[in-house]
Length: 161
Image (cartoon, rainbow, N blue to C red):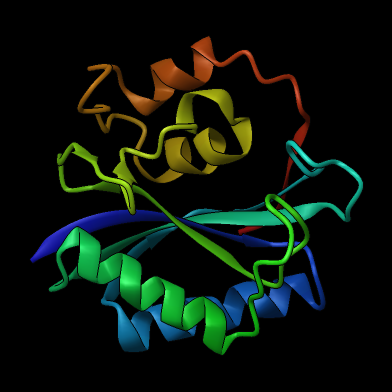
């Protein structure tokens, strides 16, 4: 069994309901959810002319390898209505693989650990909540240390358990 940390988020429609639907679909199609963080709200990162995002980290146990998991995630996002019209634009759901076991993957279709984790408080805060001592396999620092060193000043607010 593989352990994957995912970040789910979105900023269109009923954001809370979309996170809930995504969790249910992840559990049904991808693997057992063993941990979930609180839900956090933040302004859009990158392309800022869009609604605020809700984000949540989840840990799953899955039989898929990292590449299979990515394909299943893309299917799940499409099933929920995700379109990819504008890079970093508004979306009903977004599911990113943050960590996969302790693997380091650098492929044209998948990079793990997620290459932007150290720059994004909206990823690190929920990750610290569910895996504070997880060690980034490249940087060899815990999520807690990465959060302390993160230069992102974008406000992130806890919304719900």
